[in-house]
Image (tube, rainbow, N blue to C red):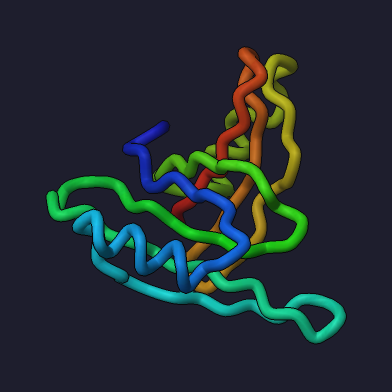
Length: 121
């Protein structure tokens, strides 16, 4: 079911300063997404690629209410994975599958209490 570690998303209060720092460490900006939040605020996500083209990404996020690290795991089909695991009493679903710009996302807590963001089609 889990295919690979897609990315690790970290919170930053100053996204431009963070981009500059990580670029100085050899990462390159790969994409940027801006989402409108309430109160006319914008949530910016920036994906940074490592020099190894097969590596996962580092994602910078400046969401005001998400100030913790997120680990994203790529799965073939988020909705199918959810259906297979939804009756497993050891898995807690923090967020059921929802659609995004690039596919679907769901958030689960594993039996060891680690939280994973599942991404895929």
